[in-house]
Length: 605
Image 1 (cartoon, helix red, strand yellow):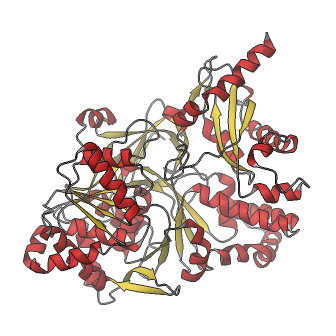
Image 2: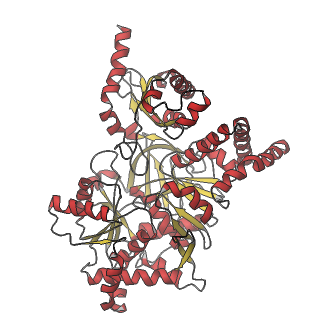
Image 3: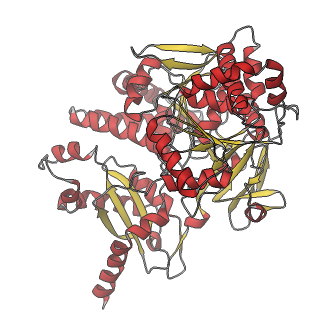
């Protein structure tokens, strides 16, 4: 199939905007809890729609009193916390446009975003963030920038007090200025290549997509459902889910430090979560390592095989009696414990950002956690498509959401149109024109549609490697297989215009000590020492050999190098959403790459 579209389920009046989502929930007799916050003692408290609406209005009035006009851009730079969502909606109530900034951004990155967007003010979390913003403003002499309000420094109270002079009618007039076609936010791409560009997402992108996604996922996002947000809200995926939950009346809690994720999951007990594939890999690998450390590795791996077999049989509609019995046994021995570690109530997980892979998808489904894999970009307000509990094919990213359409171009590129697609790139009509063909947006990804309209992602157009012999190689398939092992943190396949395929591999610093112990190796072995240890190299070689079995000989990895330092966001090699900055890795490790091919040439000479 070359094209598949799904009609809109929910039609939204053109004069509506994101603020109507909050007002609608506050007018309900049930007055649903939209958010939950944790106090110093670790207790969670609900924030009802009416209370959220009241505080949003107070802060929005403060913005108006501070000179923020309709259409002005206001930046938000903070970790994932309740106040992020609070000020996001306050900006919209004031008729302004919010501009997310990753809280890990450098002064130069912040300067680019503030300068390019023309932001007049910023919300920040702490003094550290305020220093970065002020340094960025000073470095570029951004004369139009005026105010910084700090969450931890009483900035919100300052706005609440300033807004007391603004009457309700003035705020209501400002709130209703924007319609569905007006820009709600400018999200700058995280920059895996080149300078970040501002994606103009409209109120319609958020409202129409949220209402239609909620209609397509009633079992997941509904009043009474609970989720805990730990992905950065500066990223479109988390941001969209946050707005979707307001549209559905579901409750969102936040945990700003991923180190606290497990205890927060256990105390808050969400009904669904959202994560990127690396998080699911970590859950799987940590469970495996814990089992092996306790001498229960055989039980774990047997349980994995049963979970995957059960999931595949369940999807085919034929689970045999013997498999049902084995599954029930492992549910008590293993699966229930993993679910308990995630809070005990999680039934669904939404995965995006990168392909999850069949094995992990079937494993989690088999233990009682249905992973709904979705696909989208910053430019598509996150989801173009997503699997639903009624319509799921593990290994695909589902069919288009209502209001969206997908087309496969002649070269395999995925094109899309619909309620999800951005208005354009801010101040870049050239890029906007380049991104569209006859109304269809070019995603840059390669994929295929099956007979039911389910989309599968097979690679990134710009990341397809073409070897010196002209062979096209999709690196993701090899990388995902190798990275699925607990010992591996990252894998980058190399070989563009080269005679053969090679790979750069990093070790997982958390998993290494346990692996060393199980292999009777010194506990004090460093990452650098491990990278060159024969036992470690033999383990990685076995992983590479296994991955090579899934591709042709011309696509197989012939040589690999274990890099001593991991690829992280701090090192500049990962985006905040955990995607590899391939160009940066190849630039920083060019000496290693050249050495691989030079050595091979010498051996052949």
